[in-house]
Amino acid sequence: MSRLLRYQVAMSLDGFIAGPNGEYDWIVMDPAIDFAALYKEFDTAVMGRKTYELVTAQGGQGAIPGFDVVVFSRTLPAAEHPGVRILNDDPRDVVTALKAKPGRDIWLFGGGVLFRSLLDDGLVDTVEVAVMPVLLGSGIPLLPPGASTKLVLADQRILPHSGIIALAYSVPSGVGPAPGIRYIKAAKPRAVSGTSTGKPPKAATARRKRATE
Image (cartoon, rainbow, N blue to C red; front, side, top):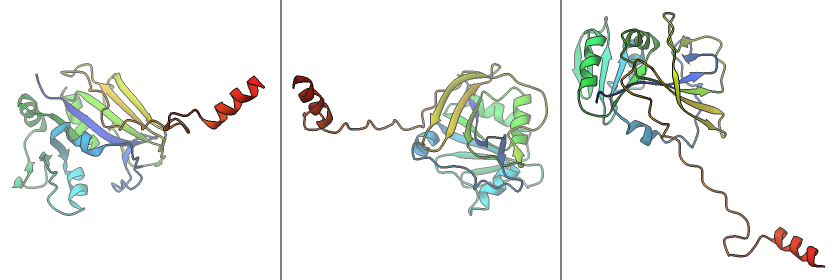
């Protein structure tokens, strides 16, 4: 079975994936998100030049441990670094070949222009968005203008601590449905006072005592 190409991104409530200058410091963190579990779902990441430059601005050549990173650019010269390949080839041909190889799913890391191109080519299988409780007002949109695409909701999770809403949609023309959202840690059950020792809570004991008086 072909690997899934999954557009997995954080988005502001008003539809932007980055600020006007590529800022991402508005992204909200939540302790329930298990990033290690999320990264284990993939072994390949594809991205456009602008996203790559944002990644490398943090230092290094953009490598992600355990990933084959593929960068598409019409302006950067083709090059290879440890774990990273910069290509001038047609993304449609490269991604088609990547999907045919065995392995884990492919993370469409960004940006919106590459998403639009691969979506129009019928190669995107899922759209998975973590909606942040933030209004940016302007920035880089989730998807540039173009043809509309209907999606099918596969899973949804609400994170009460932060207000993040995680959504997973399948693209009907894709090779398979979106997987369930598995990177949210299970909530720890709250201990009820008095039950750890096998004794009923004091309030319950008092109520029973009053009922027998």
